[in-house]
Length: 448
Image (cartoon, rainbow, N blue to C red):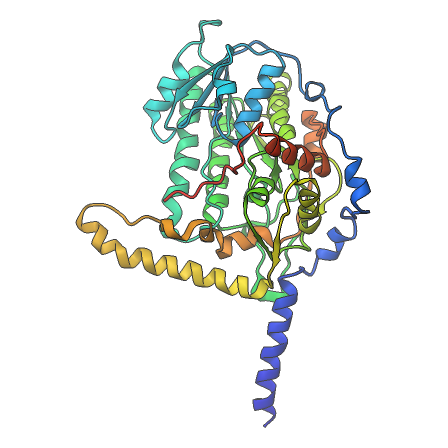
């Protein structure tokens, strides 16, 4: 009798603890106690970014030749803009898509359509000399990536590997031929821990990460994006250690905020936003600060290569961590239209995420023999699912976490000085989108 009563009670207790775990981790209190506390709309009204001068955060112009791989993308666009602002005259964008007309029409900027998964395409794009210098680029900022953060199954792996790993290998191969330095954009996802929600109260998920105390390998994220970034990082490190190339790695996080990001832009463009992650806190970084960090790292590779080449640095923005609820409240405050948030319980979303992952797995393997008849493979993403494809366990592993990034090493060694706090980054992003200065869309596209 006791056993029959005990099993349901034990199951009920476990489900209760799982519900709690999806709202906080055993270590959440250490981050949430020190997180930003909103004092109301008056505080948000006083926020201004007009006096921020990004040229104070970067070294002076070098007039070298610059290649920005992925320069038409979210981060790459701001690196190009910052290079123009400080007076560089030889800037080349390598991307599969052309940049915005404002960049493409600038006399200092050229564009070469490039497929980084093809070594010859990379060699042709990087090897061409600049008219002003008569030489190929000597500095390469490699920001190109495919960000399929929602996937972790092995059948999805090739899509991330092909761009993020093979593409990086090709960039490094040509960089060695040209004796060019490479600054690689990775992500804090590469070294942040992976929460184990089913362990409930026994999940030893770390809240804070820093360069000298990254989580052990067995708790690192195993999603396709994070794994591919770690593999690419190792290639960049090996190029420095084994081949003498000047290389560096930046790990921005937790989220890069700016116009066309997936947080602010996604919230502004969706008719209704489903939310289930309100209490989770993280340090965030403005896209302008991440762009500046690349120029700062380039300077450090010139000044102190023996200290910084082949190294990886976490970077984040000014100020404390913010809860995602406060981030969305600030977006709503600055938005000119009414934003609607549909609050959902996290447990059903967690279960639904696993159902979605299982459905996609079964769909792919069911279609595989039929596609093989024509010598092809099924698409990974059914078009009719739209953005619902993101609702998978790997996404929740990066969403339902508290993450505090300590970038003191980057500030001390590289001289990185973030200029933007979270409120400034949010207001800037919202106002840029609403003014029409950038397209009202985020850069995260679902591709098969």
